[in-house]
Length: 279
Image (cartoon, rainbow, N blue to C red; front, side):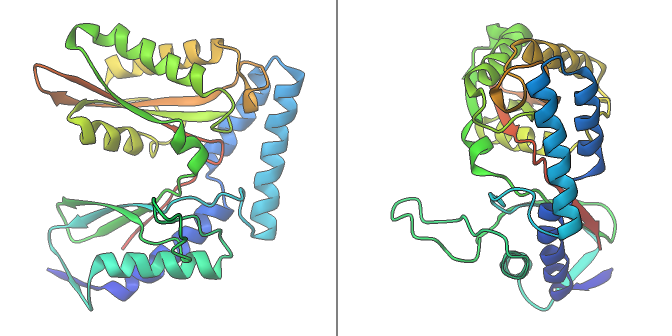
């Protein structure tokens, strides 16, 4: 058994919130560079270059890469041999978000859904817990902007719709989203489980490294086909035309009920933010 004080988790979350908004991951940088090489549209190429310049400015000047610094979505894998002390882990995570968004000068975007009154510290965070073997705790922060989240959907397809129905829906969702999610986007797809499981799988799918191959050969083939179909729509960067609308499509699948076929599409913008730490 290993003991971790939750104050250590609060400090880690604070840093992750700031770093995720200041420093774009290398896999995204590399995907944008490859996009410039493939993009046929002069306007599209110019936009991709500006996005790279924007990321460089954010890193060098330590400012947010986007004015929408997102809802703090937190994935926590807790080792079953970890003992947490010093208070509630959820309270510690929210304290880390509160400190990170304040000290990092990150926009506070969370409000009451009815009154629209801002909570003024970007809390409460959305926290997903998972118990895993071992004595470590892994935390991933994935700030999620409102524009791309608004373009995401969960739908209950008919089992007879099958793979082709799934692919058609994903492509149509991207077509309808157009420039609203600030493309180039990353498309997370969750297939199966239940209504809420599909949505969580789609969000988790966004965390996979861009350019990595899905270990499931069937899903890898689907991802490649979907990426081609989505980019063939021609919406391009920022929806202004071109061939690089999506940088990647990531799919996670889960067994589902014989009577249903849940499907979730979670779209992320070009500020494809996520940072992790292991404690």
